[in-house]
Image (cartoon, rainbow, N blue to C red; front, side):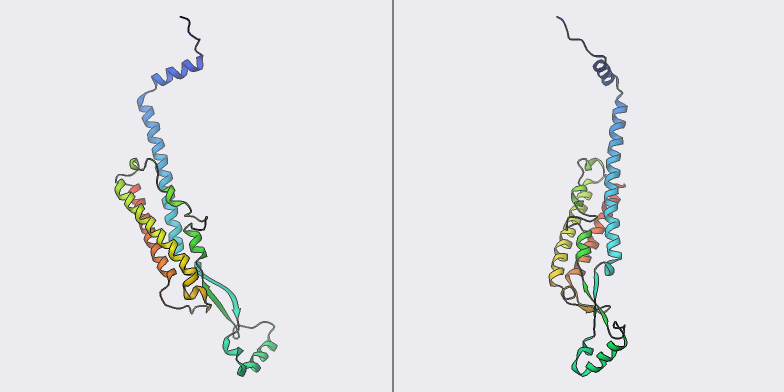
Length: 210
């Protein structure tokens, strides 16, 4: 029976496969696994650093001051002459006749946690579940427990940040800069949820580095 000629390339590939030492195959697999693990660690660290930055700069990130208002007392009828006097002295009101009014904003927070379709944590949960995660950590159960807690905290943060934009007193009413209300708000509770989420990211980093 005649056989079709075998090309030199096919013959070499077959021979190489037969003669390839098992140790080399294992080394390649280990190298690939380590690379996947390094990528995952970098992803978790990046998320951790982003949330840490947000928490450390929370007041600045959630404060939006875009208005220069004339104090209400100057607008009262009895102060009309004083207001006109100030206006004649200066083309623009100076600091003695105007205040900066502000609002609390959820925009930066929601961008950071990825619920607006952008930001450093957009799609983060999918990235934290690698196909071979069981081979990457010594305690997979602990990792998935931390991941579940992280997801729960992030869901709370997403919900609270949304509600804050429509319900919080300082988010729907202007206040003089530096004089926001001290009452508890959805935005402040959202901060607590993000703090918890960041804590669980730290646990995941420790588990991956063991």
